[in-house]
Image (cartoon, rainbow over all chains, first blue to last red; front, side):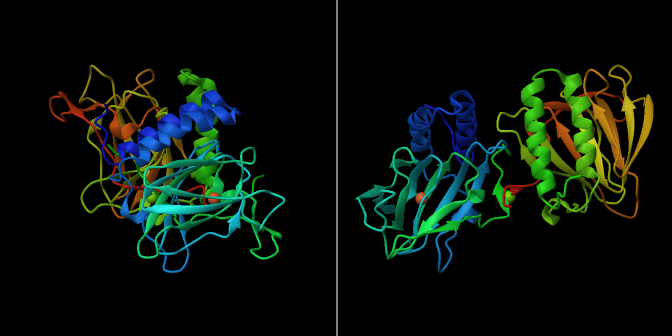
Length: 194
Length: 194
Ligand SMILES: [Fe+3]
Ligand SMILES: [Fe+3]
Ligand SMILES: [Mg+2]
């Protein structure tokens, strides 16, 4: 067992993911298979996310960049949901792993040619990890499972996700619209400090 | 010519250094030779360092981490000198590149067996880049060349420098003492934002 505490958890996750993407290269199935237990370990203990990256916005969900691989092969973000907040229907265009650090979230899944009619539904409780990608299902709508408190999930994507050109889909017609999410933060955590 | 502005300069430097250390591996001479013009380009324009990482301390020089390679093969720091501030005599134990972004600094160089008697002296003005390493000379004492304003240099080292066990040397006797510098900051710039 490791005696890892605090921000060292994020540092160890970054190091392990960096080694994984370096070895796996474009083998997405391997990245998802081996990345899943790494993310599960990261979200198993809620003691490492600095407060600045856990702040909800009063109106919208927030996406804080925690780390971007310097070759932009992957990025790690904290998704902070205020009470009852939700995303639009959206895609990612790259692989993604979603781990719930605090609270719970509910997701509806869509097939590309069936938006806005949901194909399925799943609930992710604290500590659970799910995956998305164009290969395995890339379109969803996600919301905080709670109407009365904040939920936080940690997402890992196969690109600098804040800069990726992707899509949101109209809730009524399913019509796609271009979308670049950006990030809420102009500073990152410093996990190299101790 | 590139139209790079603002924090994109730091992003491009990080990307280029990451590629360089990945290709050069342990070839220090290559890293210094090819890293030098990259750092010279970074410090050629003083428009990209966020204010939070340019703040002097009233008493001591300050070292802010700007980026650490996720495999800890190199790190990038801003060294902020208040008026008249100086380092002790110290070593690094790894390669380093020093580029002056703002103001100027003066360095005295020491041979390992001759501390505290300086072997040489150099002045680095804005835009200039110098190198250190155990191979080419690793012990120096550096100070702000100005008694009346702040100077800032950008340093790149062949490790997570804040965590490296190295040495300071007594100014009178030359006796070494163990030293780990750490970093002043618990957040980093976010150069992946746009
Ligand atoms: Fe999503
Ligand atoms: Fe030095
Ligand atoms: Mg920061």
